[in-house]
Image (tube, rainbow, N blue to C red; front, side, top):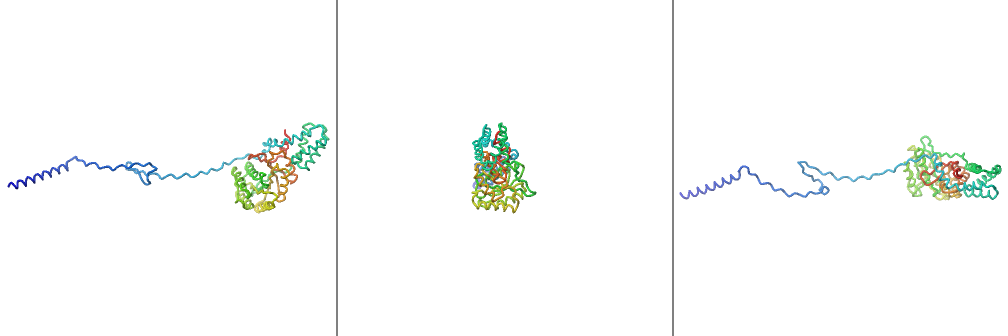
Length: 390
């Protein structure tokens, strides 16, 4: 009996313990222990975050933007200049011309104003004119005319002396020569100007200045860099063109000049420009090859269009050497006008008279300085007045 009671007590204790455990387990208000949070990852700066990661913020995911593309280089177009018109340029540049030429005028006026004009004085007058590159024949004509008129006048006032000298200089320069620059287009075909001369005379610079002058007069121009044998010539001409918005046609260094000239005229016709100006090679003028090449350039151009103007560029400081150059070029191409450069830097302005007399063509343009707008249409009266002074 006692054995059964012991078993019953043990069972009762076990049951009470089980009931107590269940009570504690399911007791109301018990909260589960908080979950253990994983350690936070360090936040990387934006530029170091791996691609494709995002940030959690209030349930929304923000994707990082892709890296910005590098900016493309900006091409800056050269600023196009608006040159002044050619009209009146020589008047505006008269003082510059007078500074270099007035010594000749003052010397002649002083000699002619002497009370007694004997043979010795007339020899001095003749020498002054020849030294100024007037040429022997024109000098003799002027001296004979002056001697005759001075003899008739007898006594002479300074005004009369100046008038006599002005009259004779103008007569030799011949103000009645047609100095028109033929750059007017023919219907749909542009005028073509061929610029020739020896290297060193300012030929390429004169071509660029002429283009600038025509643009200033409201014309559209194409340049042809047919001096393919001088490396810097095409670059130089293209720079002149870019300044005023004129296209330049060029070829490979050492290429065929005639081909470049032809392409320039073709482009001018395609773009319906007013004038095409072609710069040509100017190596030693005594070389037969250069002269043949120049003739070929002209013939090739004439397959496409008419050459309206052939300008020979001469350096006024070269004097009679320039005259020999002019003669050689005139034998190959039909020179229609002279462009005299560096006239502001020499007292030998008489070359205007001698070159016109020798070639039978007028001086049409003169270079009166280093500036881009210092190429001017030649005006005989302004030129003579600059020599004689006010």
